[in-house]
Amino acid sequence: MRSLLKSFFAVSFFVSSLALAQPEGEIIIRTRDGKTRQGRVLSETQKGYLFASQRGTSVIEFTNIVDLQKVEVVAEQPVAVTPPVAVAVAPAPVVVAPAPIGTVAPPPPPPERPIEVVSDDAPAGEKGVREGFHFGIGANLGVNNGGPSAQVQAHFEFNFGRPVYRITANLGGLSMYSDGFFNGSIDNLFQYNIGDVYAFGAGVQVGVALGFGGFVYVAPVLQPVIIKLGDRGQHQLALTGSVAVLSNWSSTGRFEVSWAGTVQVFAGYSYLF
Image 1: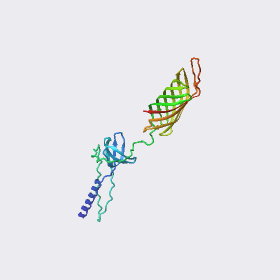
Image 2: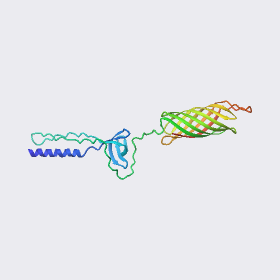
Image 3: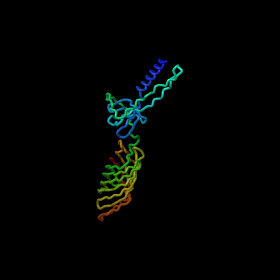
Image 4: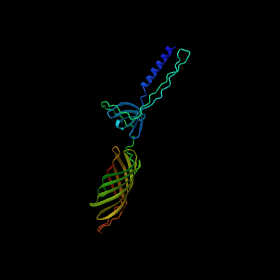
């Protein structure tokens, strides 16, 4: 009878020791940006852990780790074993080792090897959506129905995701039937982003031109093509057209010029900070 009991306790102690030696592989990592991730460490790189979670696989740098804990696993209670005697013997209790608390110093990294991973923190499909205020500079080259034109620009953009409101200040010169004019104008433009690359816009331009006298004008502006390039859509190429529908010309009495219906077409580049 005693030999059977001793054998049973020895087997129970051996089983519980194996449970302590093989804990679950999942861990919880808390990083400096306040995020908490749960998953498994696949391997170690020179900079950090190659970590697999439900959101994907990414490299978490050692310097960004604030806290690292093992996931505590509650072991299932073993099934009571009935010895070949009339009296049932209770199984030995299984003790689960507590998970370590506090910052765990990472082990030295292995030799560097190329690993291609996809970061789970990078948002997808959001290159062209940069909400908030942005300042930009640019330049235009174009023609009108009387000669060439050139301008420099300053942009003040208020981006609301898809819709964008932009105020553009234009300063330059134009040639009209062999006469040169200084031209300054302000555009009030409304832009709509179709996707990450393409957008279109429309608005109203108010300007003044000075040459042999001066005139003011109001013109509708259309931007049918706006192409956004770069990782943040900061490079923009635009095709712009306008038609001056109101102008008053004051001359020295030698001639009078009416610019109603003057068409201008520009191709321009802008950089938005």
